[in-house]
Image (tube, rainbow, N blue to C red; front, side):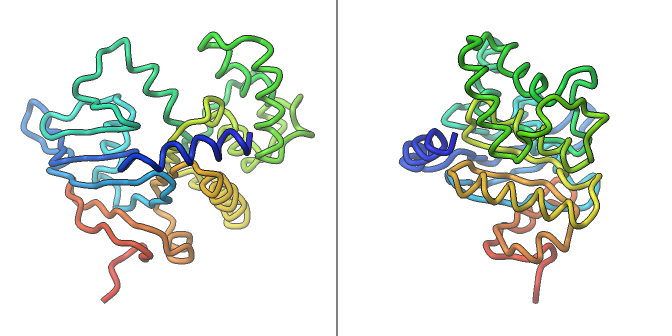
Length: 245
């Protein structure tokens, strides 16, 4: 798994970015502006926090990246693809380039850890040999080898999130989007998840993490994209959760 991530990272860093938005925005038919004229470029290998109050546009930002929504103006490009020109049949291929982790884990309750991770490959038609090879590698990466046969109800919140992260990595994505991944976790477990995300980032995967957790953002001092009222008000490297004067 590690070597695969490193090979992909070297190839991807030859491009200018994995995420580009140029004057990108979304306005609903009723005139409500969800996102307005965002300009941002995220290069391969970056670790970026997306912050802002509820209703600021973070969810819209993410939904544009995974093509759940289509920008009404401007351009959104992800992993080398212009999403405005993407045909419906090409969307599944795009989403295999993007791993997604949510606050509420979204595991299949009647499947084991191994089966939850393997199923994400199975539904895309991956051969059984690849699944048998890939799943143990991923469980080793996230530290869940000994929990492979456990159901989600037998896991702690942190273990459930680790399972979700392993599942998000099954297709060796260029980008991992983590939407409030520590929102349901205690502080100690939250830091364990952050350390795992740092490890994944160091192996070459670009990480975009939406969060309200000021302590984590302030401690990490990575790049921060701040949204307010649908507008990108700050794009700052080595930044805190809130602007420092």
